[in-house]
Image 1: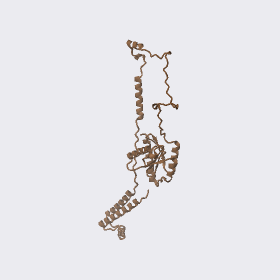
Image 2: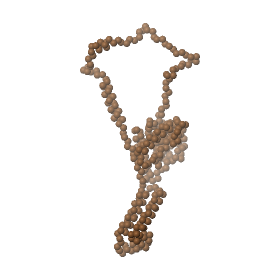
Image 3: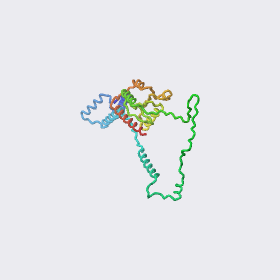
Image 4: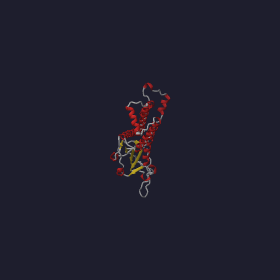
Length: 318
């Protein structure tokens, strides 16, 4: 158990308060001074000669000792913080998909014509004549001349001017997430720094490059090639889950991004930005994670680690 100075001072204050209260009580009721050695020798002689002593004297002594011990326990008892694991609600996407498939199959069967001879409708004679009388589309005859081909005019430079409406749109780059090599390097950096690396999660359609936790309820979250605005949205989603599931514990999230497209125009000062992974490695040289000092800290860190695992699993289902 970690020894704290405030607990030691509280224990001393409690012992003094109980001692003063007992001194006042025994002096008032029994005329007994608990700080006097002669009085204790007198009580010992009475006990040796088996002389009668008031029962309330022993009861008062027992109550004083019990109150002192109970107060010390209340001061130094370990404070167990409450961590509620989030309840993962499984969505009914699977049932909805099955229901949609059944509805699509039913609709297809209702639209598909029935070719069974027993269910064929009898076409009226007028309808048959109308069908037979409908003219067939005739293709162009062989003697017909093809339409005249109009060629575009070519300017003096020989450049062909294409209408602007026919220009194909430029494909926008998509964020495919970090590479396996980047994830491996980041995990190695934080593992060497003493942090516990967790599995990555896809949040708002973006795959994180690193999620790591440390002592004192700290958490590191990083991405590669993602704008700082998107990283801020991911952090806010984690913070929302923490506020909904935790009572008193506050988790500090340190966010960073590598090669952010909006590095020059970013407005978020709390999100670290690095050009390369090597810059992040140099930054983490003096950011070592302190190890748990005793069994209580290790138990709290294990509970914190299990909670983060549950949050990552839950946030991946949202």
